[in-house]
Image (cartoon, rainbow, N blue to C red; front, side, top):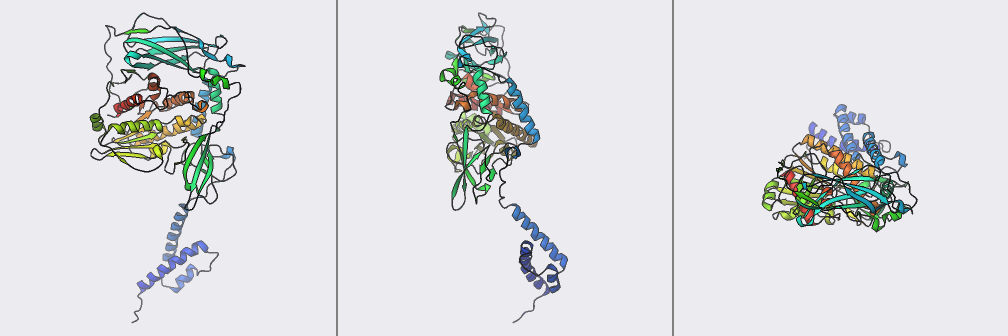
Length: 569
């Protein structure tokens, strides 16, 4: 039986049909001869304003769809035209670079024997005494000579100093003052009672320092990079880097950051979002000249400075009282040396910490907290050590490649969560690893809401040593800005910075030398010194412990983590 259509039903059917036609009309107006909007209105009782509104809504949806479709990446342009940080950041980077460059020795020599010789250098103690009291300062003078026995007339040598007492399992760093005329003063604080020995090293001569500085900032050739693009049917490898000399289309993996771009060549028929894995490898290239290479013979790196300074006799004097130290907390002013080892326990100089936290104390401290660990393999050491102490944590398998994947462990009964993530590019790893979810530290921080149950722990440095210093400075500036924003939206969030560790004589010393790490260490401390954060000075601790491994032994890790806990518990 035929049932006549009502007016509302008629309009409804028409709207369903016309929706499809109007969308096609918007896209293919010049190709297809669909009836016009006015013609539709004449054939129906639907008013023209109603249809105009429908068309506007559909066009908005179409724009939204196109906007979210993967964009075809930009074409590579000349280096002078490529994206750089904002003028503000770029100016900050240049200012810091200029200040450091002014402190690097400008040397001219004709033979390697003109360089600083540790064995020929002379050591003396300023105003020696028979006995010292705990807390006294001692100054050691070092006058450096070259291999020919000539007194050096300029400074810039990369020295390292330490006091220690083997029987007491004690050690501390010394602060070095360069007078830029071949003479140095090393200032020690005598933190403990007993017989104290002095240890001095020339890590690199000033001539080697100048070569390292020039080499690092000359180019990007120490490391090469590759990426894998993946789609449903195949996988393609392509070259990447901070400085790609190519006319091919490229993708910028640092697009969201106010930093220097990192490009990957884009293969045909692949989108930038198709990058799933990256890898890097040492090229073996060098920026050293033939004259400079002998400066880095094994015998010249971390060379002992012999001396006849007697053991220092340190007493607890009768008129001395134990200094009252406040509890360790965020916002405390950083100092160097930042503390000392005694009986293998680290004692911060500025706050009270005299014990190793027990498992029960750690569980009680961390109850209800979410701890974010962001960094490199040295931060992974922290994560593994701390999670190893807490027996009730469950490991949630998040999948990925080895230790570089995101790690998450939880204690549901105490509501404790610990998460580790790598700090993002530049990240040196010799095998392909998944990178689709990797972010640089500023991006990680921007995605943390923060509250009094949130702890953020950061470390970055070693993976930056092989690149020109402006890459690191821009990242450090970005980290500072992100921390400032986090503390504005959540002042109660606890933030702890772990500095770099010292290392041994690395195989790739030209790009991984401790000199590069030391420059980064100083930059980061200066950039973050006025923020309400805490610092675990791993650089100082690894010198004091005489640890010469980029990945320190368990004893050092235990004390680093213990000081971290003192700041948040």
